[in-house]
Image (tube, rainbow, N blue to C red; front, side, top):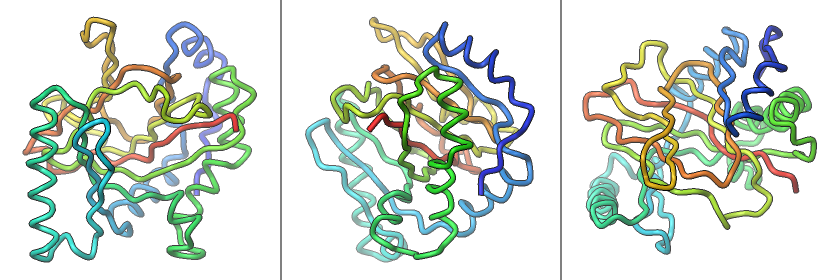
Length: 241
């Protein structure tokens, strides 16, 4: 499912990660593999709406089967209002489409299905070896994964991942957005300093692996209403236990 590009300059990427605590790996997969992965996410993924309105509020989801029904549409409107209100008040919030790949794998939602190959590939020696080498963290032993789609009006509020799970060492975003993603469409992975100023921002791109050490203040900026393609990615954390 994930064949790595054999021309990755691991030494240069490792130097950048040591200096900044974050790095982008362009062209991480072979082109054919990345295109097949994007096609799977676009055409063969039962997306659900995930949202949270407040740091202490529960994460809620609306299953794919309900999203087009009146009940699901009403719940989606509720999610929009609740997350808008939380963000307006300066509280943590998010809303985006998700498919929890690891949960689906552990619970057997689609035994032998293509999404299971994603989590197996993220935990394969090729990917783990690349991430260990680039980050300089040999203790990394496994990864989780979810597919994410930031459609128009979706966002992920600023947070640090601190105290979420002590085994999280490196966050990742395997970007599969269109090559021609326009800066005006939003969906940027943003990093903040202590004053809340954006000190770094990465545009959604195709076939680029973002890696950054946690904890770290970051967000995904609001995706504009006219960003029709949607920001597609596989995201998660590499763990040391």
